[in-house]
View 1 (tube, rainbow, N blue to C red):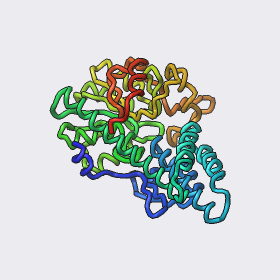
View 2 (cartoon, helix red, strand yellow; view 1 turned 45 degrees about the vertical axis):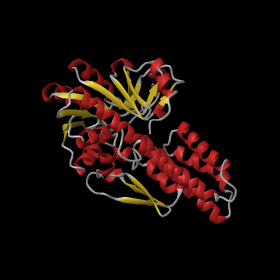
View 3 (cartoon, helix red, strand yellow; view 1 turned 30 degrees about the horizontal axis):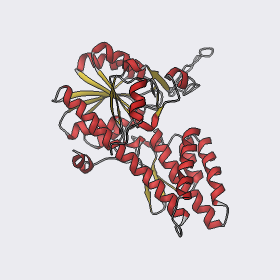
View 4 (cartoon, rainbow, N blue to C red; view 1 turned 90 degrees about the horizontal axis):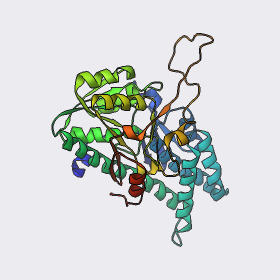
Length: 356
């Protein structure tokens, strides 16, 4: 199966080529494909801040390449490139990279510098780490796709209608994607009839990104208003709801794009199985529950698009919600699959080696 997955044509959201980071500007999709060439940390930070680069994995990987760009500029100018890594990390976090992820990224870069061989060039070491992180993410996605599609095959074994929300695809990752990676694998394995997508308001990732991504690869997709997804489940014979995640607490609670929670509730009512596909790096065993760890994330004013507002009427526009673990049928990671995730199972999972 791996060979078939690798052979399939896939869209990409960014490319590192000849010392330059090229990013597909997601603000311009689906109308036009515009690539932005980034030669500096400030250029990458601007794309992060302006929403041109979405997806937790994609933002982190591009930030790794940004640190390489910053170090190169300082080396060429004879400045203190080592101290500059912290300065550049801070700039990326100010632009939207989560602080904890930025700190882990910086720690990995510094660790590679500590253990580099005598005579090695620091810039080469930093670039190698950024490339390696990119490849690791892609390999993890391929492993998850294979595990996820086997669940789909085992459930029914013939053409099935799947459903997703948000854009947990190649654009949001280092390649292939998480939730949409499983959808791709189902298509390649001849198991997919159609994938139904929620628009994913307020940012419309489903309408602008996920639908474009699947259409580019000839995968049958249909777009629906988020409010109609329960109706779609009931009327269209959906067998699986497959979603990505922004974070997973120790008890299995899932932080996802807004709408994931109501999708999970509807799925349970209609007998549709919910599969969460996410890297084990998103599992935080320090957080006892999702409500404890995630309740402050993703809230605040965020427009739902151009419309007339009534003065005196507040707008509630969270970007994320928390899905309780008891609504999750399967959690698929590159380390393996958990059915009905809980604290004990997640602790055991995190002790395993990666499968890829």
